[in-house]
Picture 1: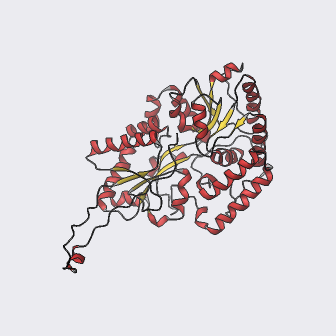
Picture 2: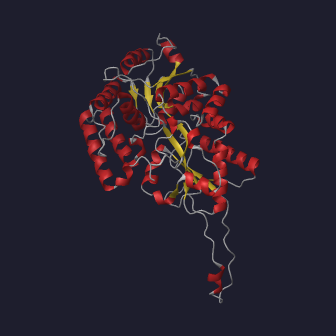
Picture 3: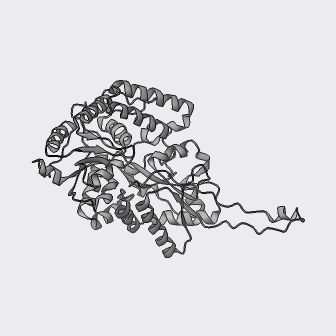
Amino acid sequence: MSFFIRPLIIAAGLALSISAQAAKPAKPAAAPIAAGDPELAHNLGTLGEEHLQALVDRYNKENGGSMKLVRFEKGQKPAALNLVSRYDMADVLIQPKRFLPLHEMMAKAGQALNVGELSADLKAGVLDAKGRLVALPLVYSTPVLFFDKNALRKAKLDPEQPPKTWFEMQGMLDKIQAAGYSCPYTSSWPVWVHIDNISSLSGVPVMNAKGQLGFNALPQVKHVAMMATWAKAGYFKSFGRRDEASVKFRNGECAMLTTDSREAVNFRDARGVELGVAMLPFHDDVYGGRQHTLADGASLWAGAGHPSAHYRQAAGFVAWLLTPEMQTELVRSFGSLPLTAAARTAAHSKLLKNEDQTLQLAYESIDGKGDQPSVRVANIDPVRIIADEEMEAVWANRKPAKAALDIAVARGNAVLAAKPGLKKAQPF
């Protein structure tokens, strides 16, 4: 099920001027339209919406608030608060004036916001040039490998020894297939996993210093080509561009899955699956060895042009979310990485074994470098769509990997040339 797809943006009502009504005495005077309650806009899946609604209800009850959760209608004015997914950042980057930097909203509302308390691993893309927070990295994670220990046992493999490299994984997939699995391995969020994070793990950027895309270097080409051979052999099955593959794993149809670490919470009740987790495999033939994965996810942005009363509640909601208790609740509900050291300690003491192990592996995988302000192809929606199209062509045996990635880069650079604002890691 998809938690984070595209944030809902709802326009607040405009107050009518009494003096303007007085200028038209022939018509009865209309009552001013109330400013209404502050809104938190989103476009989560059913389960994600339930969790978010529970948070909003709890905040209102404990703080006397009137925050409302609303659904997204693309193209309308941003709400007071907006949950923006990784795949929706393009909307923010090309329309920065429709959003208010978070530090500015908090200051106007008289709420403290100590950026220094936030984990350095999670601040990529949400700090401006002066180190001020422009958004809250609310539900961040990093890709990991989930696997079904039962499948490994059936294939006569050690369920406590998952693969560390892609080469090692290939041999395991062959045995899993021989054990009767028609889907040994699958992946959600393919561009995020197989372009952005494979590039980071291999120490090669997706964009050069001149702002030109370059995810068609040898390591990326070799990886996508390897995936094509796996698709031909039946080791790898592709089900979609978002989290469709996660549903297949959760249902026990696939033995291994690469996806966001936060999805561990989705697998609590996976049917017949004994969940195992490992860091994302790496290519051991790349110079420099294993590097690090990236942290990213859904961030909370303030919309511009709302009443001060709305911003006061929105700022209170943000401050409330940053408390250790609520950070732990976010981890339990959404699988997100805790934002502060205190929250990380609290979460570690209260989580179930599998979820705690996932968090620890996620932090090890980021290796303290999740805050590096590298461009993510998955964050530039039109470029991500292009990369998805070209990788799918390779995995369907319609194009060779090198040609497909060359085309993806050329098409992507054409998009960036037409909309240069999309190159930015953050809009302020």
